[in-house]
Image (tube, rainbow, N blue to C red):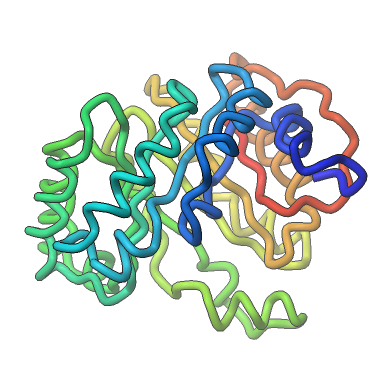
Amino acid sequence: MPGHLPSGERLRAYATWCDAVEGNTTFYATPSRATVESWAAQTSPDFRFVVKLPKPVTHDHRLGKGAEEALRAFLDAVEPLGPRIHALWVQLPGSFSPADLGVLAGFLRGLPRGHRFAVEVRHRAFFEDERSARLLERVLAVTDAEWVPFDTTVMFQSPPTSDAERDAWMKKPRLPRRSRALTGHPIVRYLGRDAEERTVEGWRPWVGTVAEWLREGRSPTVFVHTPDNTAAPALARRFHDEVRALVPGLDPLPEPMPIEEPDEPLTLF
């Protein structure tokens, strides 16, 4: 967001470009209620926050015993967002396997009603073993939770060519693309490359998928990433334009506030 704006105004500027944001920062530290109240004040009631549960809940305690206090503090902190909470995002470590699905089922059942839930898994068995995938879908169906794909396939098609790409190459999960929606509110995370043409070529399958979801009456949320996110705003608008060419009834994006290099990826729907 614009570097010349105070931190308390950057989200307001971001919200002129898109109507949703990934809440990655909540994974590393639970914000104060005052901070969250400022987020709400900078956005309209229909702005979407997909807020990630804290690391102590998902990774340190793996949704089990000992996670209760951190979860309560997190839910209390984000409460001021109200209807802006599009989904509580449960990102699980790569070691969280099909053998742990009982823990996930119990955890999701214990979350407060009134929220949507979105689960991101990174264990390869969920993508390569049909039985494991079906078992996960059954667990998610009990609470109408969505399975969040993180599409990094274009990143791993060829070796990295920059420091940002090398960092992504080392840190991001290497998993097959998955494009099956389970609910009326699918969420997609897409990572491209430094080169715009490679990013655009990599998202081609998603343009058709998202267009079909819209025709089906679903309300998808798409997050566009690049290794350094410098071009994310322009790329997000280009993706939206490509989908809108297939679904003319989709509302156009508003004229955005001019921005400098973003520090978060943009989303479209």
